[in-house]
Image 1 (cartoon, helix red, strand yellow):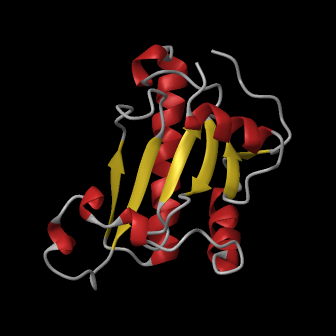
Image 2: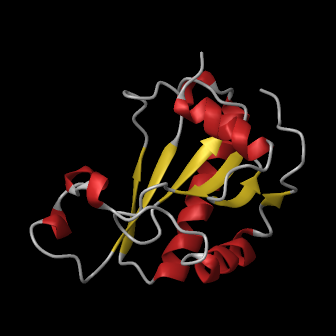
Length: 156
């Protein structure tokens, strides 16, 4: 199966995805292609699996630990109030975790709505130049967890 997640992981492996933040043990930390909230990110597993329950216990634990550590870094570097985490896989049947920073200055009623209430089509596209400082800060925070971007993916 080839989903957008599969294609994006392939681009990351080949060094063709400018949204790359870091290669973690379980996958790839990346910015969302649309920044409906500043710092919206995803964790993409490598290898790609249909859903969390397709991992063995060790790989599942690693993916969730990487997701939480990524959230810690995002929280610290964005000044957000909290991070919303989501894994659906309904539209793209491949595991991927959304990490959404939530901010004190979000306008009502969006401030208490789920992130999908935002108009993603109107959101600015990710721009590597605009996000250069945040990318560097997240890489520093994630460096203890990072793998070389050229490293072979782990097997499950």
